[in-house]
Length: 192
Image (cartoon, rainbow, N blue to C red; front, side, top):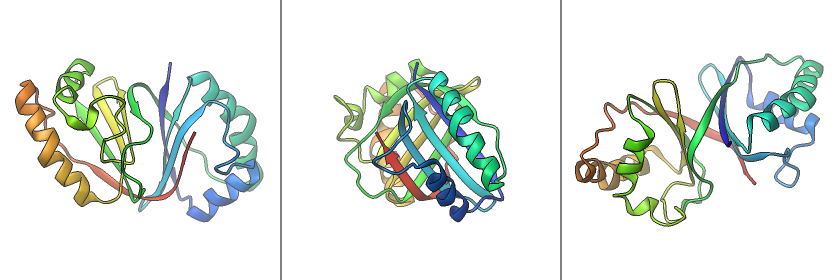
């Protein structure tokens, strides 16, 4: 089953991230087996990484064989990953500029609610390639759902909420609830 992995590295810098990738030999042409998408952003506290993997086993293998040893060698601080099952993943929408990561946690919003709302949205028609975001991940948490999107700007997200999500909620009779997006500037992005 596909999974979303979210992890934060307090105190880590983009230079640390770049050095870690060099140490592991990771670049757009040399991605780890099982990785389907990766985005990292700089927060006030450090780094935030959001990955999708083909399976939790592939993620665990990568951490054990490559991340752990490389982090130890470089003396980088660790973090505890949050792993969630993916409900929907649009690897590449119509957006092309990976400017910001937008994370929304929606407590009480179920996969059935998500399916009802997205069924009313043009952006989710077909394979999702017309979605205006660069990418979109919908994962299931213990409390509801977590959405991780990559957009060009917070303003584009606002327009999308106004033009598509709001009307789709009304049409489906489903309410996403209060939305407080976390916006993180993108440092790097890979997609398999």
